[in-house]
Length: 396
Image (spheres, helix red, strand yellow):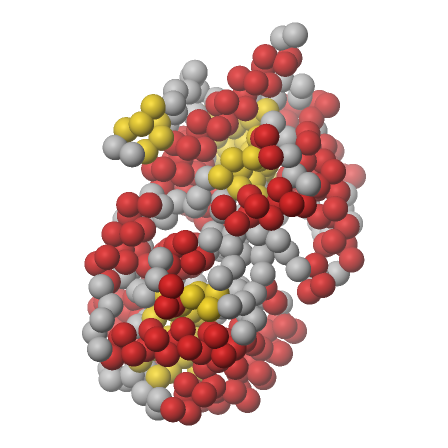
C-alpha cells in the first residue's frame, strides 16, 4: 500500500473475481454501499457480481446500467433454508469466485457455511452496525447473533464500517486480528446542495417559505428512535410555531402505525409523513436541519453524511460514529434522552435563526473524509490481502 493525496491506494496483484452477497437491492444504507462498492471495484478492473436473496428492488437498475451481473437466489421465505442454501452452493461452484464479500449478519453466516466448498476462496464479512439491543427483536435475532460470534473465526477478514462497531464487536468476541475499519463512502457528486429541488418538495408538502423544517430520514424501526424524537420535538412545536417536522421512510406497517399515533399525539398537524424515496436528495435539500435519533445499533449513518454533503446541518445521538461524522459537540445528544435531544435541536434552531451555519464547511467535511474513492480503494486493499493469505494457506 502507498499513499496518494492522503488516500490509501491498493497494490492489488491483479483482477479479482468477486461475489458480493446481500439480502436485497431495496433502498437502504447497506444496500446503497454495496452498489457503490460493486461499481467502484468494477471500474478498477475486477470481475464483480452481486448475489441477492430476493430478486428485484429499486437499486437493481443501477447495477444493470453499470453492466454488473445480479444472481437472484430467490429465497421463498424465512423457512426456505435448504433449497436456498443449495442454490447458493450451485452459484459459487459455477462462478468459482476468488472472494465472497458478504454484508450483514445472515449473509455473513452463509458465506462462512460455504468455506469448506471453496478452500482457496477468501471469505470477507461486512459488519454495518454497532451493538444491537436484541430486546427489541425476537428470539431468532439473538440466536443468529450468537452463532455469528462463533463463526466469525472462519472469516479471512471482517470489514467494519465504524470505529464504534469495531469496539463493540471486539467486546462481543469477534477476532480482532482480522477486523478492519472501512468507513462508508458518500457519492458527493450525487448528494449536492440543490435548494430549488428542495423548495419544490417543500411546496408539495405545504411548508411555507418562512417555516423551519426539521426532518428524520430512515426506516421506521425501533433502533432509529422516532418516539424519542417526537417527545423532544413536542415542546419545541409549542414554543416555536414556525418549526415544522417531516418523517421520511417506511417500515413494518404495524410499527409504522404505532409511530404515527405517537406523532399525532405529540405533534398533531405539525408533522409531515413521506414514504421512502429512491432518491432522497430532494428531501435533504428541503430540510433546514436533519435529526438522527438512533438509540442503538447505528454504525456509520449514511443519512447524516448524505445530508451534510447537501449542506444540511445535523443533530445526532451519540451512537456509532455519528458524533465523529457531525463534528459539532453542541449538536450531539445522549441516546434515548428526549431532554438531551431537545437541547441539541434548540441549539441548531438558534444557529439557523442567527445564520450561524456554514453549509459549505459541512459539505467539505464529507468530501474530504468520506469519499467513494476512499471506500473502494481501502476495500480493494483488504480484499486483495485476504485473497493472498487464503492462497498461501491453500498452497501449504
